[in-house]
Length: 582
Image (cartoon, helix red, strand yellow):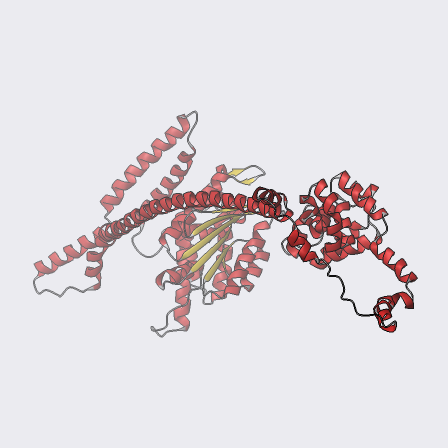
């Protein structure tokens, strides 16, 4: 190490300590970054300067200070600023002048910190010589009263002896001697300037400034190139955005036109004829013609038996073809099962339309349900009977059309119970069942949010959707989840203010958006009811935000339902949701 052979004295260590304390903060921080131990527990961008100084001084007390500490000392003292740029010859010739100008301790300390062995040896030799202060002290010890007044006595001696006055001989001043010295040549002056320390220091600073200028010019060129590229890309994206906006407006206009022409237009004329009563005609032929016209409008809206019979025949033929294809295929497509189920439901609905001649339900289960509902005159009793009926529908595996008709009868009875207690026709019945809540939000343009516990819902629907959507001992498959997502997506498409969230238990935390109104979540974490906590967190955030939103929670988990009800949510059974989206 550098200081092992020539260690610093106590006086030099005190000088180093003062130099470090007076050192600019930026230089201290940049030098200390070379030694990570100095920054432990301190902020990297803005450290505590006093603590950093204490750590550097503590390292200085070591027998062999680390190289980064020596670099900091060189920066704080004259070693880097002066001694490092002087040659060995310059130091030999100018050392007395440097000692007189800067002081003995600063110069010799800087020389002992130098990386050159010859410079450190020169400093050690200078330290071995007695200092001027010691010589002056010895001289002062020999000084007496007589020696102190000797110049005055020598001046007064001629006066005391009455000797004639003699003017002192003129002395040659230093300035005169300097003036009398021969002038240096221009070449010699230039050579001395080039060899001087200030010139070399200025040259070193100039080279550093030139290097910084070149770096800044390179950086400026790079930034200009990047700016040009970003500007070009921004112009391209702006053009694409304008084109997309134009295409978007055209698509919206086309969609509105198609909706008005193909969806609303066929309903307008029949609806107007139903609302506006036609004037009674005195002519029997005219009245008959008017009735036929109105019946034609009714048939345009609801269809005829011939049309339904023809569609039913086509559906049965397609169902038979699908079943035959499923039986004959060696590798049947998964879509065959879905289409067979959907087509069977459509056939059952069509047959029900043909057999329906009045408002009275035709199925024996529905007739029994209607008779039971007519005996209920309390909403709580209706809700209890609804829960018992859902267990029956799942146990007996009712078809989806029967389930939908059963829920329709329950909704109708709820309105009848309200009308019984509020006979005033001006009273608008409040929503009671989930279907009524959803319809109320749709009619009054109110926001609604649907939160579905997916892995609690799907097993309850196994009798309705079939065992092919489940693995033995492993619950619902990805195909079952896709079926649920597709059904809920159809519901959100029809209800623009309905936000739906489907939660599934999963060890991985992830989510994606099917549409702007439908998001699918996988809870992450551990346990069998991981999605429950995430559903409750979502409900709690709604409560904190204070949004006026109707919140529906779909699950049969009693604990989750109790906590959701405390947060203002409405309970929806899996079967009722399936009837709503079917």
